[in-house]
Amino acid sequence: MSKHTGLFNYRPLTTEELDEYGGKGYLILKNILTEKGLQQMKEEAMQAWNAEKESFDPSKTWLQNSLLVNIHHRSTAIKAYYFEGPLVDIASQLIGPNVKGATSQLTFKMRGNTKPFGWHQDNGYGELEPYNALTTLTALDDTDRGNGCLWLIPGSHKGGQIRVHQTEEQKKSNSEIIVQADDSKAIPMEMEAGDALIFNCWMLHKSDGNFSKDRDRRILFLRYADANAVEVYNNRKPRLGKLVKGSTLFEEVAHFEADL
Ligand SMILES: O=C(O)CCC(=O)C(=O)O
Image 1 (cartoon, protein in one colour):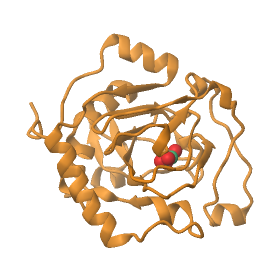
Image 2 (spheres, helix red, strand yellow):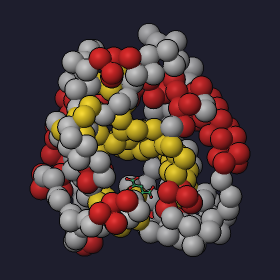
Image 3 (tube, rainbow, N blue to C red):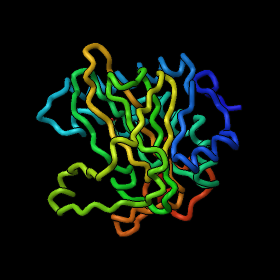
Image 4 (spheres, rainbow, N blue to C red):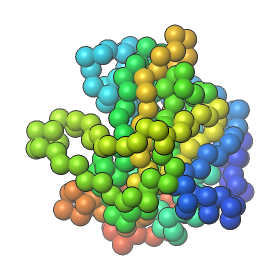
């Protein structure tokens, strides 16, 4: 039993859930955070957010308005969740025995942030190979259509990697990679605070703006990958992220954040 049981609820995925993930490409896990874990993560996340971010400005980019990267450097509860929480064993069930963290960030769409985020695959941004990386979104607020929840197309991960041509200028400016998708097949991923959504790296997803007057939509975004995953777009160099399970062929990954 882990030392963080007071903050998180640990359980393995059932055989039915594994089948469902294979078929639909996503799962919602109820109550992965305890009430105490939720409160502590929210509090620490907000301290970091308020120290760094100003209110929504439509002239700013998505990165400036909505993202705070490497949040595990600034919150002990989030670091524990990323490195030793229930998602680690779940990621290992879906990826295999060797797993590393690939991204940690706050993805906050505060009230008044009405910018949508177009259809994309997370493996479209920074393509990793092998193609079994997964995204997890842990809800720190209740999220629904009113405050800009995520939408996805069940089964769309089966279409594989979609490559969108970008000019060098677009790449440099981190411009959005928007793909074509059939809106009529999309379903909203409504969640309660403390739930987590996990999905395949090829899942097509998007979100609308937060049009609520009085509700924020705060989400913790964590991505996990095979411990030997490489960055296809970066001369196949290994993605640097802490090894959270098993072993890796890459020294630089074995040492990355090893003392954190
Ligand atoms: O937070 C959102 O609304 C969209 C985020 C998203 O799709 C992503 O970061 O991949």
